[in-house]
Length: 345
Image 1 (tube, rainbow, N blue to C red):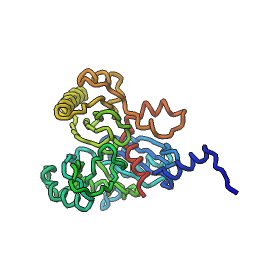
Image 2: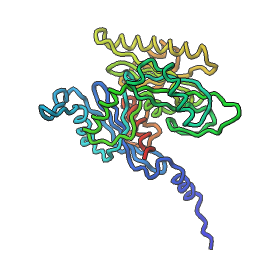
Image 3: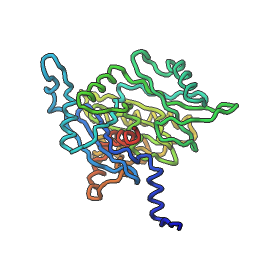
Image 4: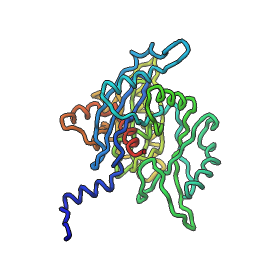
């Protein structure tokens, strides 16, 4: 006797079968900033990612907590991570950790479509033309920039079929300082965190913000230590990045002015050589929460400005919606890390 499955139940079963988060449990995104650490824990469900908990801890209270004994050094940031995990009740100990843009050089190179092994050889031989640093002192990672119609999640490799006439292929190259990478690896070990990946914070931030589907966009992250500006295409692929270190002697206002000037230059240079023009700007970081920041940036660069809400496509308790919308710009990087961590075994 055949059993008919109700359509509503079949829809649920289909979501379970196709969800890339199924059986992945929960995972953390850890954003280690210059003055604070932000953590987001997400849990995988058939419907997508569900917010388990989140929180932030200031680092100024840990200035003198970086040594366990005269002979054993212990990074204070590891202690802060442990304290924050306990405070917010996080259960997972698997995390993605962001590397600061100041320690990562990002560039875009163009080649032809090849399989991954061939691309790796091409990239290794051509990287010195695009990365103006000693390659012996950095760890080089790369990612294909997918064109419309090519299916793959951001920052996951996709296989392409060879053709007689290879088509152009753009590649994102990221060179991370080995010294900084080793420091963050030690922080993770001291905090007893399993880290399947480290990545440049630019990639994390762009993953957390729903891309503007019709046009490239600009993302500006204004924080305590400086600002980061990224241009991304409609799929959220980073096409250009810029880091501006805050000038401690001239105050935050000067950082904002320089950030807006740099953003305008990036937009003008991009629009001058691309048919699709940048359509909007998204603000993230602590600066995005300043009431007059969005109108100011709109006035300076001539683009409509939105405030980042990385929780907008994450399942969250309704009672927290207003709070998460308010604090969301602070957690953009941490959300992006947690989203990727859910897809990593």
